[in-house]
Amino acid sequence: MAALLLCLPALAMAEVAAGLIRNSSGLPATFPLQVKTDAGLDYRLTLRDPDTGAERLTAHIGGGRFFRVLVPPGRFTLHFDYGRQWQDETARFGNGPDAGGFDLPEPLTFEIRGSGVRAGHIVDLRGLQRERPAVISGQFICQGLRYEYDPAFDRRPGPIDRAAPDRLPEDLWFRSRRIEVRSRYCR
Image (cartoon, rainbow, N blue to C red; front, top):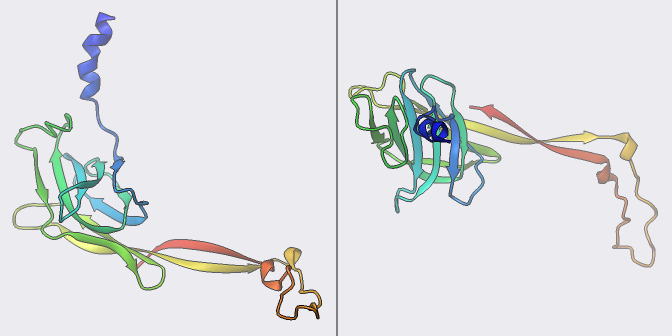
């Protein structure tokens, strides 16, 4: 038992898995956010409401690794904490020379644009220094409908009921089509 208690501090300092930690917005996360980073430092991303400062989403990013997360709709300030070893919610990455934090200068908006386009962002933090700010570009998920005719489900309308000519038969021909929603990354 004593050996287990001695191991607990080491377990607390273990590497944090990259990915979504918390979505406290109450909304579904459906908009793309990709963050590109250099290897060497890890990041903790926090999306905040720009008016209230309330945290809406938190994610951990492994430095230099591919990272994409879906976020809820809205307008958010992106805050990044960075460092070599995550400690906890209070100490964050600590006070070392490679630890710190910053906000992107302007809030980012995640929204539907046009017909079926979910608009998100790519935030490139690679090579980030005082002279070079984060590079932000758009990332979009386009959605479309695909109609498929299946003759196995073909049911032609029956005769019209002369007593109620405005009432349509129950097995209308359009039930023979399947409709699928297709999503893909687009520009």
